[in-house]
Length: 174
Image (tube, rainbow, N blue to C red; front, top):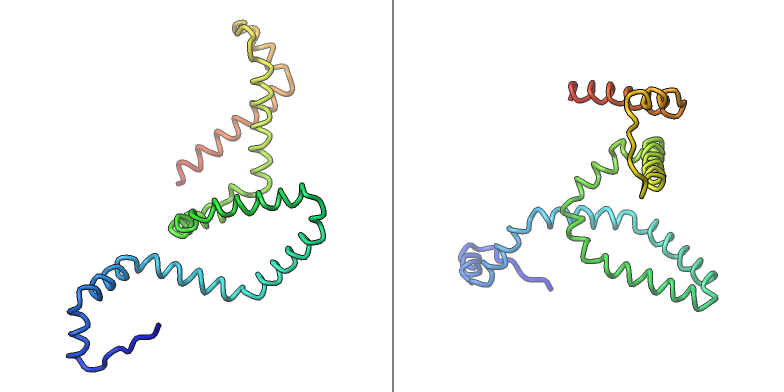
């Protein structure tokens, strides 16, 4: 749909007097930031078009080769269904793209940090399993002193104290 834009001011004023045109312009202006972000993403998508096309063609070829049983086809249908459910999120993702990019660029996703957090989670689960349903017996100060001889406890306390020092220094510096 191409509309002729009048060049003389009277015709332009007549167009702007139309309530439908004014309402349409108001909607466009209200959504200008989202439209700008959408235009940027569309441009980036178009620039990567050949690469994306090659990737999709490769995936389709792999799918054709690997989907020989009904179970695999069913899994593929499930994956497509899941993607359809995610489609409504695209607007929200576009609005929060700076936040998402900041998270992706942050050091929290470094492999060594992920390993530490993974170990922490596994240790928490194991400790929960070992203590669940057992009576809590602190044992007093002498029991605690005996626990300090355990190399695992010593290593963990060393980690916690070092973490506390480093974190405190960073908090003061922030």
